[in-house]
Image (cartoon, rainbow, N blue to C red):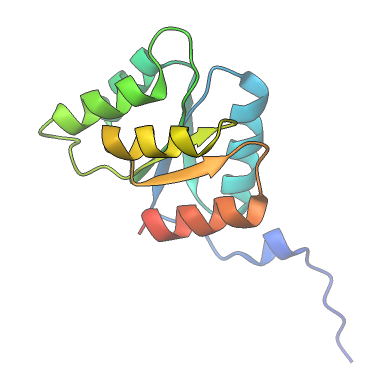
Length: 135
């Protein structure tokens, strides 16, 4: 009888081609999201503010952007609006991440967001949203 000794994350065959840009001004949140998504096989890049996110997205358009709403220089709504105005990035799926209520989700949808995740993260919901939008 052969016993399986691999951990679940070791059973993943190879990195997916989907490139996800995680944008959050909190380094711990970026690290957590990057770790979770890379364990799922995604290629992940991080940006710590809205301006850096726009520059990275324009240089190499991601398959999906996970975008924190509350950031100091440019909030997630503003970043979303700028992306929607870009010919190159207009169709980029954007999932907003916030600790706020339903009003934030409505404001995000009005700005052009395609999804919404609440903090603290529900890991199953995070992965579900990524799988929906990063394909």
